[in-house]
Image (cartoon, rainbow, N blue to C red; front, side, top):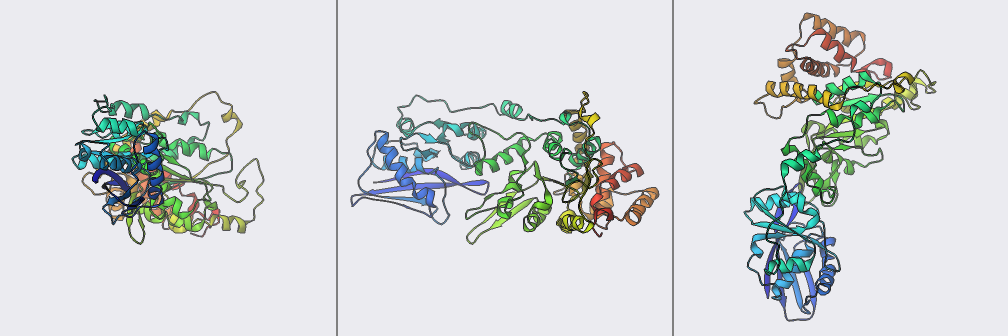
Length: 515
């Protein structure tokens, strides 16, 4: 007795079809799963056995061999429970259906036969569509996510018996599950925080507006309680709205990682990830025996916020260097190499000294110059080189905290950011991997960031008199280009350069770092 059921598994953020082949023969009872299954797949033997019996079907007391093809690729996850159960029931003729080769079947089985949600429904639905299959059968909690993919039928199920009835033609569920993608996208693309919540800190808001307009990485330096975290959390609200393609790619990553909430169709707001400073390097960039996306990939198309930056382990921070340049991360293992996208804005926050009170007019700093230099020196030059904007965040005055007036809303700031981004898209049209000012390399800086003689003098004085490092030169020009775009100016003017120079605090000698 032999049957074949189609299922699927994920590899990175993509999916591939898995054929679940079931062979049953008259022999001593044995239940074997082959095809490089991991522990969670092997354990499905017990779940499938109990689910079939508790659903009122007969479990064969014979030798059962299940092969997951292709057999040379590692399989993981509990989504193979349902297809294995369907394969056994089909091989024992308890299911008589001619549509098994038209559907991908997925689902984790509870011992009573009910279905539980799985990971990676969206990339699997895309794979089903690309393979020319008719549809997908999966737990009802994953229905919205899979239904994002058009031109494929999605049938949500709640139990093994319901799936069997459907395949045998006894179920009255004739219409596949549908959603209005545009309506879902509009409903989900709303933020719960707003820049109008922030009291004072107008100079920091301005710096974050510039960062959002040009896609620049930012570091904020200020005493505890000055609002660094509050400001960082609101940065995604002023970034350009996500496009549908960006939302789909972000949803695929969160789906594969198992972080998409049940009954959620789409991640339509820009992600904000804030890992604790005790995080490991593999948790940050991704890893594991079978690689999973890390925090930098979960922040794709959004913001990665590193609070208390000097408290992170040095090796953790150093692994950020390559993803910041390449906008992707490649994780290599002995038998596989997985690539995850990692196009994010890096936002960091730190105290100006170990005690946090350097420059605080209300508290005395107790740190020695050597302690301050050692503290600031925890941030390596190569990492600092990839951060365009350094902004000092002062303590908020009581008059500002008690003020009843509110600042600009995120929507108002976002309008200016979007206009600046549109200017940049027109400027870089036709250039590969160049979409915003932060993406510019030396050649593009020379072409698009030309300055006049007065600007040259300002920049020369900044480099020589303020103690700015050589690495600051290109960064100042890129930030000045963004400031000019926000102002609607075709050329970089002296006032744009002067403002950009203010955002290089960590390059100055007063911070205890030798440029």
